[in-house]
Each structure stands twice: as structure tokens, then as C-alpha cells.
Image (cartoon, rainbow, N blue to C red; front, side, top):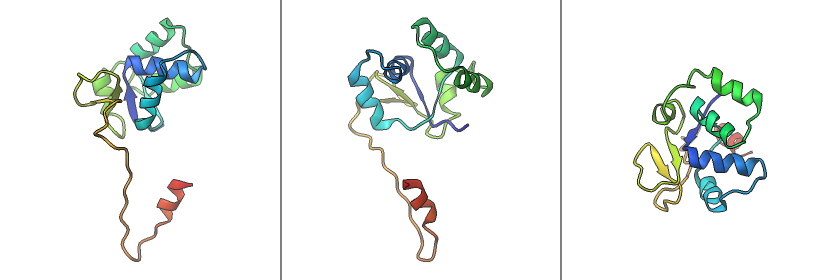
Length: 128
């Protein structure tokens, strides 16, 4: 399983509340979705925090996270195992690899360049 990014504890808890149709901070969720790319990676401490908040994650997903070999890593080290190498946060005082979800300076864009005779099929498939 490939992982794109990491969510800090506060953002993760709000995301799980949202997924489970529970009352959540709509501001955090709206800002999160500006940057969110599935699938996020979590560690054992975060699983425990979710369970302490009575937020249960699917046992198959929990197993996948625990078997990923990254269960005991810090969020910073965990982020290095992801494609984007970032941790989405609601704390504007944290620096890279944390990315403040209310930051208007960063855009989430994709760009690809194809030579004249190069196939563009992969790009077309991505957008389907």
C-alpha cells in the first residue's frame, strides 16, 4: 500500500470524526481537503489516541498500518516514508515537514510535460 502523507494528531482526529459522521471541526475539514491526497499513514501512538477518543478504525486498515513496519516511528520520520513527505497540521507555528492547512501560499497543482511523439495515455488515465 502506498501512502501519500501524514496527518498530525488534531487533524487526524477531526478527519476520523468526519469519516464516521460525528460532530467535527468543519474549518479543519474544509482546509484539510485543500491538500489531502489518499492515503495517509499513521503510527501506533495515533491509533491509541483514536481509540482513547472512541474513534475505532477498521481492523483491516489497522492491521495494514501496523504491518507497514512504521508503527513506532515519529510523525516526522513517518512523513519520510510517504510520497509527499509532509504532515498536515492546524498549527501555524510548526515548520517543514509540517504544512499548515490554512496556508494560502501553497497550491496543490499537477503538471506534466510530454514530447511531441510521447504517449499521453498515462495522463488521460490519471484524470479518469
